[in-house]
Image 1 (cartoon, one colour):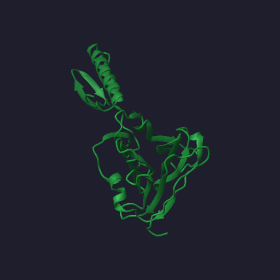
Image 2 (cartoon, rainbow, N blue to C red; image 1 turned 60 degrees about the vertical axis):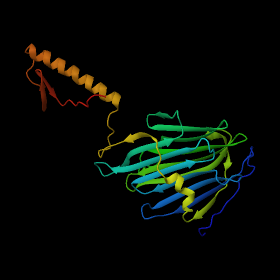
Image 3 (cartoon, rainbow, N blue to C red; image 1 turned 120 degrees about the vertical axis):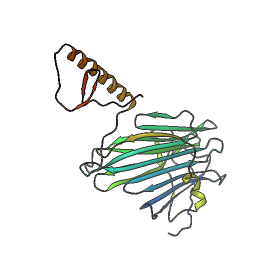
Image 4 (cartoon, rainbow, N blue to C red; image 1 turned 135 degrees about the vertical axis):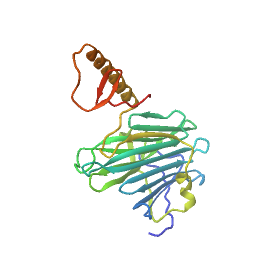
Length: 288
């Protein structure tokens, strides 16, 4: 197909027409660092300096998603997602760590293992989100996969949407799948108007096109998931406080029991003797 850039303008589709035309290009190539490289590029027809770029780098143990949107020059959107995989004690590949960094949303919405960022321009939003989703069809895949979505309001009650699904196969590791771009009337996925037209390019895009998305930036950073080599997630700050409180209660009970001569020892490995209280298999995480 060559390295030349193919461009296609979205016009009237389905129930809605766009009052601003956007060119959509999807580049695919490979590099020495990653088996699969992608760049999905939106460019405004009216102003070629207004663009939105998703850079995606994929290998079996790591996926990097880097998004930069300059569709609104005043409210620019930046988001980086790093997803890594590890092998557990049984040799199965699992999601290891998921870290999100963003700049531009002053009121980010982060809850549990999900995050959403909204950027407003002339009362029209662009939205980036990352969330876990369950699948039950393929037993070789981790039950939970991750969905990265990006919505851009092009006006006239029309939204451009695309989704990237990141899966983890227990044997082969990480992989991704694209869904979109779609054009819809609202944020609700059930109101799709149709698949937006795009052109695919075999080859790397011009460096100047993707450098904004690839560059580092001063960001707010969120860790949505972190597992150790056993596939376990360390307890949260709230859980650690509860553990410490429970351990302190155990210490008081043990001290009182020893003082009255009811018990002298408890089975297990002794971890310390504190003011007469014998603690066994109790873990302290320190102040939170």
